[in-house]
Amino acid sequence: MKPLAGLKVLDLSRVLAGPLCTMILADLGAEVVKVEPPWGDETRGWGPPFVAGESAYFLSVNRGKKSLALDLKAKEGQEAVRRLAARADVLVENFKTGDLARFGLDYGSLKALNPRLVYLSLTGFGQTGPRAKEPGYDAALQGYTGIMSVTGEPHGPPMKVGVAWIDVMTGMMGAVAVLAALWERERSGLGQHVDLSLFDVGLFALVNLGESYLLTGRPPARLGNAHAQIVPYGAFPAADGWLVLAVGNDEQFARLCGALGLGELVERFPTNASRVEHREAVVEALSQVLRTRPRAYWLEKFQGIGVPAAPVNDLKEAFQDPQAQAREAVWTLPHPLLGSLPTLANPLRFLSRTPASPSLPPPLLGEHTEEVLLEAGFTPEEVRALVEKGVARRR
Image (cartoon, rainbow, N blue to C red; front, top):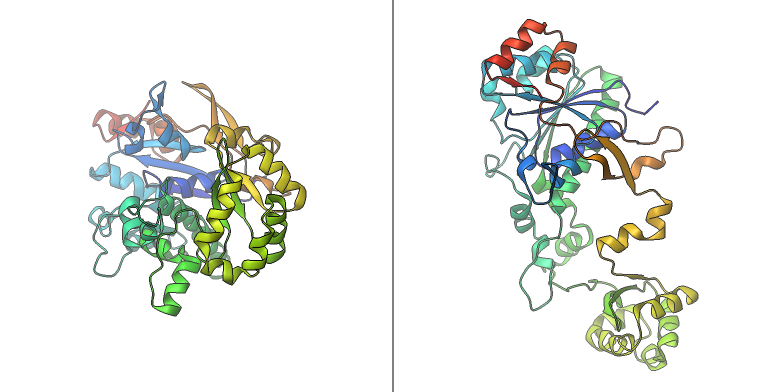
C-alpha cells in the first residue's frame, strides 16, 4: 500500500506549481480530483509538441488524477466543489489572492464545512503584503527574486533558468507543506490554511548567494557557469563538447593539474581562496589544455584519478545515460489516445516499503466528471442536469 492511500485531494490548481504538487501526492497514493473549467487547464493548449491532441506540458504534471470539468463561475459548480470539499482531506488552489472568496470557496468558508481540511493556497506573492493582489508568473518571479541577476555570462544579459524553476520548487514545497499539516492534524484533529508563494520560495532558494548578500550587503554578480566560492567549478570546453569540473578541495586540484600537465598551477594557486582571487588565470590555463582532447578522453582520465567531472548532456544523452536506465527514470503508462505514454519518474520511487509509483495516466478533459460526482453523492439526474446546463462537462 502506498503511504498516502486513502487521502482525498481536491485540486483546483492549474498550469505548473499546483499540478506538480498534487501529482507528487498522487504518486504517493492520494486520490486526486483535478477540477478544471469545461474548456480545460490552460496547459492543455500549450505547445507544440502535441501528440494525439494532448500537450506535453499538460502530460508532464497531471499523472494520477481524475478530471472533473466544472464551471466555478456557476452557482451549481460552486456548490459541487463545496460538497466535494466537505469530504476531502486536502484542497490545493492557485487562484489570485481573494478570488475564491467571491465564490464562497475560500479557506474560511470551507473550514466551516470541514474543520479537518488542509487548504493550500499557491500564489505569486502570498496572501499579505503590497503585492498580494498581483498575479505571479515564473519568469516574473525569477526577475523579482534576483535569480536572473546571477544567471548568465558576466558581460551578458540576465538569464532565466531553462525550466520554470520557481514554479517547480514551489510545487515541491507545497507537497512538503501539505504533509506537515497532515501530520500536525494527527495531533490536533484540525486542518489549517497554508499560504505559500513563489516569491517566498524564490528568495529561500537563493541559499548561499542570498546568505552572502545578507552578510556583506553586496549583491553577487553573474558568473556564467562558474561558482562564486569555488574554482575550478563549472563548464569547460573539450575538443568535441562541454564537460563540467567540480573541484572541491586542494588535493583534487593537484590531481587535476597533474593529469593536465599543469603542475605549475598548483605552485601558483595552492589554495581555493587563491584560485578564486585569480579565477580568470586558472580557468584560461585549464581551458587551453582541455580543448586539445575529446570529452570522453578527459572524463575517463578524471574518473580514474578521482577528480569530479561530468559531461554536459543534452536531454537525449541524459535519458540514455546508463544510470538513468538502471534507475528506471521513465515510467510508461497506458493512455487512451496515445497508447504508450512515457512520463518522468518520481524520485520518491525508492522508499524501501512504500515507494511512489504511477497509477492513472494524465486524464482527458472531463474524463471522470460523472464518476467523481456520483461518488460524491450526486444522483444521475443531478449530474445530467449539470451537464445539460453547461456547468459540467464529461468526456
